Each structure stands twice: as C-alpha cells, then as structure tokens.
Amino acid sequence: MSAKILVALSGGVDSSVAAYLLQQQGYEVHGIFFRSWQNETELWKECPWKEDLESARSAANHLKIPFEIINFIDVYREKVVDYLIEGYRSGQTPNPDVMCNRYIKFGVLVEHARKAGFQGFATGHYCQKIEANGTFSLHEGIDPNKDQSFFLCLVQRHALSLVQFPLGRFTKANVRCIAKEIGLPNAERKDSQGICFLGSSRTSIQDFLEKYIPDKPGAIVTTDGTILGQHRGLHRYTIGQRKGIALPSNCDFEHYVVLAKNYATGQLVVGFDHPETEGLYAQKARIRCLNFLENPPVEREILQAKPRYRDCSQEITWHWLPETTAKITFTVPQRALAVGQAIAFYRKTCLIGVGIFQEIL
Image 1: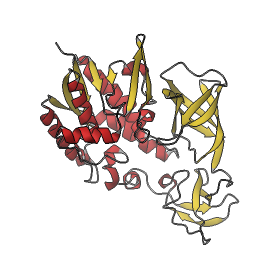
Image 2 (image 1 turned 90 degrees about the vertical axis):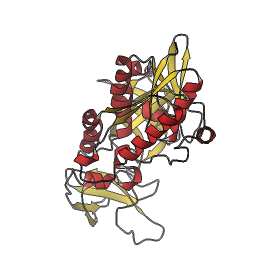
Image 3 (image 1 turned 60 degrees about the horizontal axis):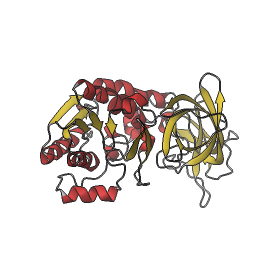
C-alpha cells in the first residue's frame, strides 16, 4: 500500500506542482486547504480566500486527488493576526509569515495530518530537506530567487519530521513548465504578494492597521530635534521606509528615510538616505526568542544570516549573552535593522535557526 501524504494546497501553482511530483513518486496524495481568514467578519471585501479555495479545488480535481477544507480561523487570528497588530501597536516590525509557518502550517496542520493517519505532509516551499544517517537538515532551495527557507526559521524541529518539500531542487521556471505540461488550471496564476490575508496588493498593511490602531499624530523631526512636519501615527511607518513619508526634502536627489520611532515623545525621526546618516546603518544587535533546528552556535562562531527575506546572506559573529539571548556582530554594517524583525541563521546553505531583534546597538 502506498504511503499517504497530505499536501497543503494554497491555490497557487507551487503547491499544486508539489502534489503532482509526489504523485509521480508513488504516494497516495490528498490535498487540504486551510481557511485562515473570514472576510465576512471584517471591514473590507478584498480578501481572496474564496478565489484561492476554488483554484486549490480545481487543481485537486485535475490531479484526481481527495480534497478537504479545514477551518483554522480562530487559531490564525490569535497566533498570526493579533501578533501582527500588537507588534505594530508596540512599535515593532513583525513577520506574520514566519509565525504562520510555526503555528499554522507546521503546527496545527501537521498535527492534523498526524491524527488523520498520514505518513507525510508537504508544502510548495522552495527549500530542501536533506536526510542522512537517520536525521535531517533544512537547506536553501536551489533557486536563489525563490528560496523560502527563511520563512521556516521559527518552525520547531520536531514538527518537520513528517514534512517534505518537493520543490527544493526545482527553479520557478521548471515549476511553471511542469504545470503547463500537465495542464494544471492554475499554471499561469500569478504568485501571491505581501501578507496572505490582506488579499495581496489589493489591501495595504496600512489599510488593515487603521481598522485596529487609531492614529496618534506627532512631529516628524531630524536627529537634532528640528521639526519638519507632522505624521498621522507611528504605527504607519517602518525603519528604513522612504516612500510614503509625505515630506519633501527640498534638496535635489535627496530623500528622507525613517530612522526611528520614539513612542515616548510620539516623534518620527528621519534623515537623508546616506550610509553615514546616524541610526540608519548598524553593525551590532541583541536578539531574543532563539529557536534552533541544528546545534546552537558556539561562542564567536562565524555564521551567515539573513535579516530579511530576499536579503543576501551576511557574515556575522555570534556572542552568547545571559538569559538565552545573544549579540550578533555583522562584518558589514546593515541598513534599517528593526526591533521585532526575524533574522535567520545559516551554516553555509543549512538553516540552523532564528532570533528576533530585541535591540539595535
């Protein structure tokens, strides 16, 4: 009897091709779509979950695999949406996709697969799970433009024992070609962009946040305290932001960038977008909420790190601090590091874990 594997179908081409590849390997493939958002209970009508659902269902029908829908609306709201709102409310820069993977896709959904008797669980992430000598490690996908290992950095290792990532050794172009060759109905469907429950680009993060966090206007100031204008609310801005400040510099080829958000004074601190601008670049940071998929770093170990998805790997030196926190030192100063952001750590291509920026030094 073939091993049964449950594939999370999002409605996109990647997860659909992942299901097909597992079919070709002889698995008994089942598809599942999890509902994470219920736009009827909210204040806008752009959430695309119904469109995603029908795309996922069509792909399952085309592949002739069983298909089910599961409701994770309540846990998603608690673990992902509330985390996002409270992060911005407190002045941090949260990463909801990382939290979704930890608590939803590789949390309650993996547990659902276990309880339902599946021998495996799979997604369309572009990363590699390499098994040897009875253990496994996670590595970057071979397509540098699509590698999604960053988003798995907060997942707990035990949750990955059942998981497969069929697309890790494929490029996006390969996946599109396969989808067209087998006639998948979503072969040409565009990739989702932005935070999943916002309806990609149809609803901005600011449109979403203004329904939960009231504006609290304050002064826009330079690092020396000179008042340049007024902002609507600090939660509307992120460190390093250049567009949307609505503050002309009155200097040719110069643009203001957000350097800091002072919640004590309500001030938004800006400066020109130069490497030498105070507060824009940093070389050291304190991190917390450590999660490791491999052996933790040793003191002064040299690692590779990605402060953000799609960032190039940066060399860091590791320093342990009390209370399971650490200080990292970048070999090259980094632009616009922000409290609350996740930073993923690697040994070469192997993902070893994550930390959350607690303080930029």
